[in-house]
Image (tube, rainbow, N blue to C red; front, side, top):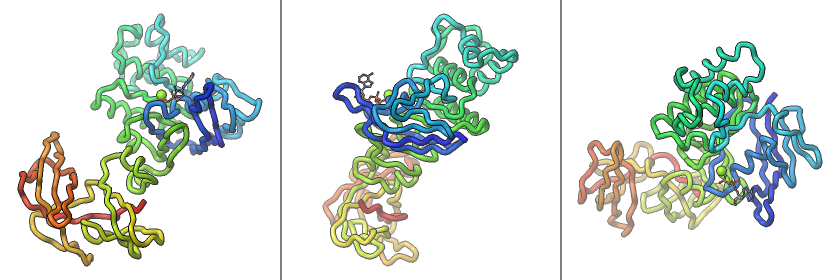
Amino acid sequence: MSDLRIRGAVKRYGPVVAVGGVDLDVRAGSRTAIVGTSGSGKTTLLRLIAGFEAPDEGEIHFGEACLSQGSRFVPAYKREIGIVAQDGALFPHLDVAANIRFGLGRRADGDIHVQRLLAAVELSPTIATRRPDELSGGQQQRVALARALARQPKLMLLDEPFSALDSGLRQSVRDSLCHTLDSAGIASILVTHDQVEALSFADQVAVMRGGIFAQTGTPLDLYLRPGSVETALFLGKAILLTATAGPGYVDCVLGRIPASTRGKTGAVDIMLRPEQVLVHTRPTSPVGRDTRSIAASVTNVRFEGPDCTVGVAIADAAMELTLKLPSFGAPEVGRVLHLVVGGEAHVF
Ligand code: ADP
Ligand code: MG
């Protein structure tokens, strides 16, 4: 069992409340992402879990073990929890193999494991004899990962481990790390300020703000049903509108849109993700809906490679919206488009 259970964790540094009362459950073998801006308390929370710091208040349990509660405190080296710090923190005087072997302890088959662990983090076996200062930032970070994996932890804490990697490599290292963690049944908590990384990595995402979790849920839930405008905008682009709520729908400048209104009626604030706005070249009526498409004219187009950002003005509403469209076949400025909303609107 490797279920992590945190209740009411608080950590203060003098007057600064770095972690202000966090509850978290992490199931065995699952993946959690904690996403938040710089200074929101992510690293401090990981340090509490790893055992580098003791909480001022609250409890941390791991499986059957109580790690932190009152005066009880299990030190880091007894926790079966691996951590990869933001800066990797390799031993500068040891070569790569020795750094990784440090994690392995006294195992006789250490060299085989070093090779296997290097492969798991997509590093060439030829770098085993190099020292950390002969590696790029991304390579150092992956050696740190290999060293943490060597200890066969039940839970792996990852503090922005991919931030030094460029985007292509980042994705491939993340994929191979996920594969390695999954096949070893190791649960993980990834801290990141990158929303896309958090949403694509995790089964469970927590949005951290000012030392507390503003919201916790599945990636899809958080993305489509954020609890606040702030969380909505933190997780991606959003179209924010005012609307009038009825039973199971809202009426707004984009017509009538199905929505879970939770009993609300009258004026409400709603959110759509830009990709929910579907664009047609002719007026249309979506199948099964008693609404018509809304005419809008293109005011500007910004090319961004695969996609483009398209500004449109809704004629009847004196309102501008920003859409994301594939850049192939993108409309030109002045063109009239007919907009239909897919899916549901989110009511705040
Ligand atoms: P994040 O990892 O989300 O950027 P941190 O957990 O590093 O955030 O920091 C949270 C807050 O706690 C910040 O205001 C930071 O300045 C403060 N803090 C973190 N570590 C210490 C420390 N050792 N001493 C004093 N303040 C600290
Ligand atoms: Mg940090």
